[in-house]
Length: 171
Image (tube, rainbow, N blue to C red; front, side, top):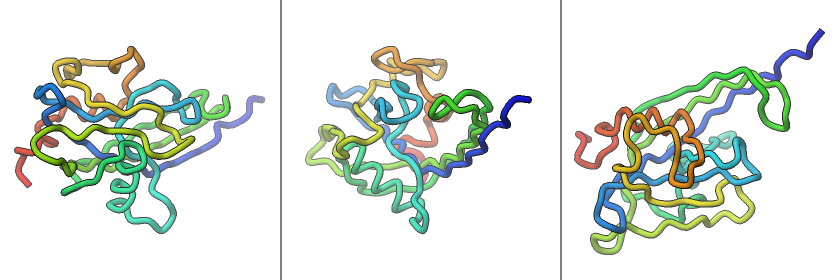
């Protein structure tokens, strides 16, 4: 008899930041999962787990700072996404994983009109790279990020609904 899948449910808060990138083209801020995270090498959004007792709003602001070194000028919850998979997961254990993602439209503080330069602040965390990715390189059908690493389903969800996250979208 095979071992039953380990059940895991995780609540996360994620920043969706769309703005002109360093070259002036509209870009989305993406974060790559480090070897300490799961699944390593995949691209996601700055964000992560909501700590016990922490508000999701505080979590998205904390995670944006830890993973991108950026501060929010404003943030608003826009959408909820979830994913449910039953497969080999963390620690190569068979897992029944349900992730619930609270998606916030975030405007980041910037000096002047240029896009702020993101940088990973958290040492030894689950993010090893964060960068602006031009939207021309991320069509709604995109499955991979700038270095060929796969996009998490939550990123593909956001790409299919970009109008909801643009700063010009109704508040």
